[in-house]
Image (cartoon, rainbow, N blue to C red; front, side):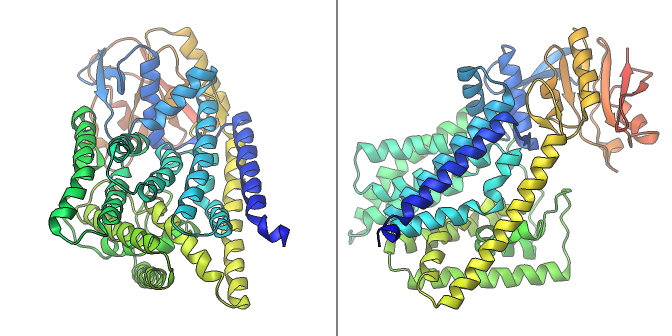
Length: 519
């Protein structure tokens, strides 16, 4: 009886120890990095060199002898500011600062969701088991393989935001400050927090106004939320988003498609049960291709129908009114937000990670329902969990092996797009030169260059020759690192980025990379 009573404590201790242990391991051997935070770290690199807030400094395309500053508004700044803080505080390299960020982000996220699950009406045991289910998902382990910036920061914050949306019960100064600062902190973590922010405030408004019988009373309660929310969002727009392009400002025109409607509807299964990960991307493939077929569409429709049925079951049978409110509002707002974004072809990929919160919200409800069914149903669910956990284990093991084989330089990160001999050569060149420009086709490699300027250009594809924007002028030597398969026509096309440099001389650095240099 005592063991059963304390089972939740044993679970919490186990997942805490495991999370800390994984944090120690990646502190010793830091992960690789996703492309998005690579650009953020380029901002950090510029700021370390004395540039202003959130600016990337690099050669001016109109005249390479001069520099230009670009405000990076496409991604939120937390992805590099938080590691920058740890880097400055503990005098560690970028990889180790990322490892600290990942560990604290995941510990904070687990603690936040545990408190939220309890606050919203679930028992301590169900809340603890829910954390285990969250931990076996591939999305939890991705940061240990590839630092994903805003994803892990958002996970660390959103549980506490949801907790605040349940804990606050009356209009007062605490409510005003919560609404104001949660908007800023959430955006600092990841710009997509905005739909979560709206959903949480709707839930908070409904809870505060539940006992009011008149429209005027509801409006008055809404003003307590609306005014600080408007101030928070206005500050984000004026001081950040308005200074450059962002995913919301990019659109390919309105286009009605099955996936634009079906993918958000299917998010409970795609994200909550790792279906998108198990399928290695239902629509968005690892190589960036979006492949659709009749089978894919049929599967998407089936997942959408089953997901909708799951939400209906949770709303009908979970006894807690607050949980039903949160499930309903967040699922509905996510469908409206992402369907609209997909329909207007905004720069948002069809990936389950964008719906991770929906997947997390359904977890305690599913665990509660499983606890009330017969034993054979519980065994079937356990087998499903083991399958998800095994898939995550295979992913983590393969990623760890890949990171151990990656090149390592001054950043401490595992570099996936350059080998060690080539990286050593580039860092030696960097130490020897003071007026050179290093050119890469991956944003992370430039983080290993400490003494010279860098340019990141897009990898070669069939449209490169027509779409490239040249860097004009001449100033010092250029060193352009390309994979070995960039020979002949590809190398010639890439050299057209620098029309004032007439002759590029190839130097084989390794079996995988060639350096093209011009004086």
